[in-house]
Image (cartoon, rainbow over all chains, first blue to last red; front, side, top):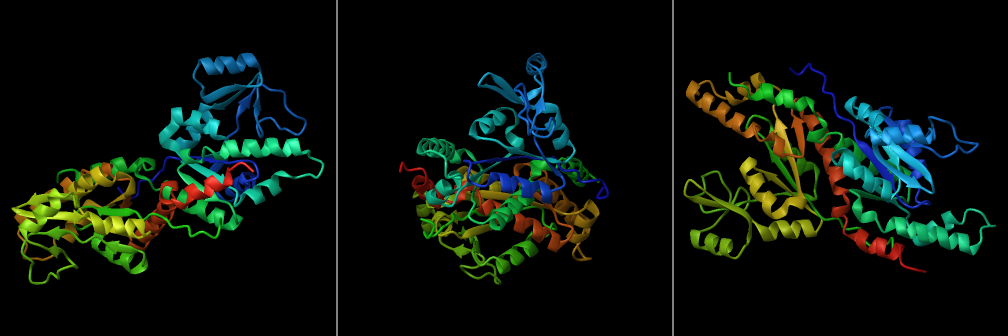
Length: 212
Length: 212
């Protein structure tokens, strides 16, 4: 009984937060550290930018193919943004979860809300905050030549994103990357141990309480 | 803003499981390791046993005092068992949680269900399972002189308790005490970091998104 593999179900780790909070660095560190975690790659109908690699940054597809998939329910969520379609293919995520692999999503509050509708019990939602307003503004003023208008717009977008912090399970104030990684390690360790993510327990308990 | 104390709200850690699963050892180790955790001491109207210390094993009170407290809503939960009353005083738990201290409950599935009604969002429910049926029976056959009837009754009670494993957030198969403690450490580390247990974040975010 104990020799049976204790396959866990993977989880969907969502990292949201304003740009400037440090999500990109945390995403990179998580993927480097957790070999059983993969980044979700969205599908889109928009034209690739020169630096973008198909299958890495996005899966680039035509509109007809996207629409057919959408009609067949093959997306966990999808949306139209500025005339292009974006979606999260269901099969890749389901396959990872069923095989005990976690899927990492670097998405905003709207994407997180949409995923919630189809995958609530698989989600672990983490919001990353900057340590202070001053620090956030300093990070958003990346280049000296940005106009005040550009900075003001970025700060407004950041505030809008931050206003959704209450929709997340965990909040990390990213003052120090190593401290934030420790928080993420603790979160992953516990969330992976939840009863609902241990399907092998069903058989284990059935054997345990059988009459004898 | 960052210099403000980041007081967390404590949590109620419930350990349930059949006798023989090893809850008592885990309870002792947790209390020794976590100085910001205390054991919940129930109140009861039953007569103390010779070995029992008032305020340590139970708070022993008279029936009138117990009934008055129950009428005033001063218990998180209470029940009558074999003509005696048992209850969890609300004030001690609320005081601990508000001061960032965790409260540990070594209770069965019925106690856990009752607590859930008044304190659901503070609860972290962990079910402790024995590694196998053979091991459970060996642990329940403590003394050679126990009759088969006694053993059969104990096993029936154990099976009844185990049948409620699905009502818990986490399940620990207690094969090795140090491994189980690692599981509990991970669970506590993550659960203490949940957004809802970080009330200081409300002020922090309010300052972060104020117009400037």
